[in-house]
Length: 375
Image 1 (cartoon, rainbow, N blue to C red):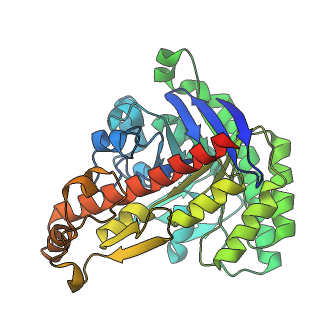
Image 2: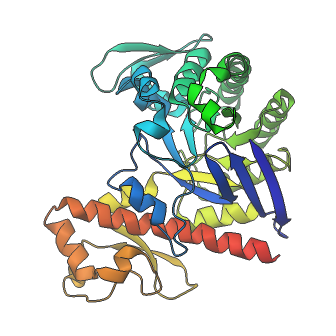
C-alpha cells in the first residue's frame, strides 16, 4: 500500500492518493458500506458510475462478522475472495467485526482472549479472537483489513474506558503479529503483481482526550500502514465527536492515511475531511434512503436538508429531489413519483432513494477534493 499527500489546506485537510492492489483511491474519500458484500439495494455496476464525474464509488466496505456467519469466509475464499465473489474489481476494506460483536450486548462475553458471542441469526455460539478475525479477513482478501478491537459503550467512566483501551492495544498487537505471519496466504494477490493486503490500527479511548492521545501514540509505536479512529458516532453529541477527532489527529502521522469509522451526515463528512481525515464510511445514505429520507440542498452551495419523501406535499411535485444534482435519479424522476414508490411499498423506492443519497455523498467528497486541490 502506498499513500501520498499532494496538498494540505489551512485547516489541515489533505488532498491525496491511496495506492491499493485493486486500484488508486483519490482522498479524502467516502466509502459506501456493503455489509454482506452488497451495498443495500444498489447494484455494483450502478455504484461504479455514481456521482457527477462518473467515477463512482472508489472503494467500498464489507464486514467480517456478517460474512463469517453467512456464507462463511471459507466459502468466499473458495470463490476467489470477496472481490470475485461479489464481482467488484475496485478496492475494498473489511471491518474486523469488533463493532458488530460490541452491538450484540447481552449475547457476548468479553475476555482477554477474545469475545464469545451468539449469532444474531440463529443463536449459535462462536468465538472471535484477534487471530481468528485476521484469518477471516485474510480469507476474504480485501485490500485493507482492520485490527480486532473493543468499542466501549457510551457513556463510560474513565476507568472503564482505560481498561477497554488496554484490551484494544493488546488485541492490536496480536492482530498485527498474526497478520504479518499469514497475509501471504491470499493467492489471488499474486495476480496483482505479488501485492498483499494492508492492515490498519484502530484508535480507541472513548470521549477522553488523554486516552485518545495515549491510544494513538501506542498504535503509532506499532507502525501500521494506516490508522482508524473508532468508537465515535455512538450517541455522543456532535461537538464531542469533532473534538475527539481533532485531538486524535494531532497524534497521528502526517504521511499515513487517517480513517474515521462510521460517520456521518453529509455536512459532517465534509467538515471532517477539511480537518484532515482521509477516509470515512457510514451506512446512513442507504439506511436513510430505505426510510424515505433524501439528502439535498434547496440551492447550490446551501445547507444540507433532509427531505422526507413520504410527506403528502410531494404527491404532485414535478421537481427532482435536488435541482442542482446530476445523479441518474434527479435527471429522470420526480418527487411525486418517488413518493408514490415509497407509499406503494415498491422495492424500486429503496434503490432510487439509495442511489441518490450515495451520489450526494460521493459528490460532496468530489467537491471537497477539488477545493483542497486548489489550496
